[in-house]
Amino acid sequence: MTDMLKRRWAWAATVAGLTLATLVACGGGSVGTNGTGGPVLLGLSVGTVSGLGSVIVDGTRHDDSTASVEIRREGAQAEVGDARLGHRVSLEFATDTAGAQVLQRLELLPSVVGRVSERTADTLGVLGQTIMANSDSARAPVTVFEAPLTSLADVRLGDAIEVHAIAQRTGSGVRDVRLVATRIAPLSTLGVVRVSGTVAELSLPSAGIRRFALGALTVELPSSVALLPQGVALENGRAVTVFAPEAAYDDTARTLGASTVQSMAVGDPATAGTLRRAGLVGAWTGSALELDGIGLRVTDDTQVLPAGRTVVDGAYVQATAVLDSSGRWRATRIEHLAAAAGTSTTTAELRGTLDDWSAATRTFTLRDTAVTLTATARIDLSECRATALADGLYVEVKGVTTAQGLSASELSCESEPVGTKSRLERRGVVLGVDTAARTLTLRRPGSATVVTVSWTDQTYQGESLRVVGLPALVGTAREIEAEGSLSSDGLRMVARKLTLRRASGS
Image (tube, rainbow, N blue to C red):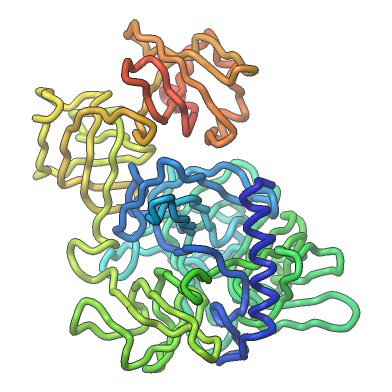
């Protein structure tokens, strides 16, 4: 476990103990934070990635040059992660010496990781959760499918997948919840499954197995199950993530035997409890709503933007809320993020090093995202003094998210940035590896330039690269791609990310 996670959980457990003692119950059995009274963290917000280079979440750009990117795949232990378009993420902020807000940590928040056990023409069933895709950017973020997937039709029964999604209530029952996917990725292996949601129908017998519902799934907790953070008790309305061995899921009974249950932070205590979250409105009553499993009160003082818009079920919004005197979340601001051109769900941006350019198809790869230039795309190459698009140019593209990546209507070439905040890419064959020094040398075929790349504990290594191993690539024709900050002479890189490029023809 990282030192940062230890500090977060120790602090969260203290806060949880205080809030559980002081916050009173609200509608549906919820209390405090998300109606949970659960742990809250400094400067936390949740949303969907809509751009990279720096990271853009629901249309707002954040400097991520010093932020760690993490994901928990097996419970307590955090791994280095890699943000992609459509990922649901939480952003944790701190303040620097000048008092400015700085992004400190970005955590990837997959809603469910498991095998497909049910499917219809337009839905998937994974761990008892009903998942649907979205192709309408006027409604919510478009579902991005990671290659080789291109649509929901490509997902088969028994496939292991990771789904990032927005929870939406579909009825008055506590199990009436569906997940609207923002990204679906195939997995080559699956050991531990994961599912997130809001606790309902909690049963805490004095002895025996504890149980609660997450949507249509019943989670069972033997006494040996770890509850994290320590000191935080389960209760209805609390946002949790459940981890378990794949074999612990019974699809017939729709039960999952948990190995770890982690309470999720949803707010910010620094300003007497502040929540910022984007999601789909559900269970709207005229004075209250549910947003991604969190109950919010709406009053006459709640500002709704743009002016003249109203709150309706199914709207994709970003809400800012504070804890009121009764311990309930009260929305101070609700901003519609969809249903208009130029809003966060209809636009996407990428910035980085162009690769795999094809003039015939007008396609290329940028930040591991497939990009297609529209027939009428505006192209500006003046800043880099290029006469035509080519691999290696540093570009910014703007357009709309599609199921396969991004459809770009604007492309501008820029001079490569320098310094620790830059995120550049270099690809090539591996000439040598020093695992003790954590360095490698690479050279792009056809080029004489050799780049020395160093990596750290915070460097993400793609799954296929971890399987093969860097030393095994020395002297082969297989290429890797390194992404990070480059020295002014272009010969040294500190990598934030290392991935193995696909073999030709694969």
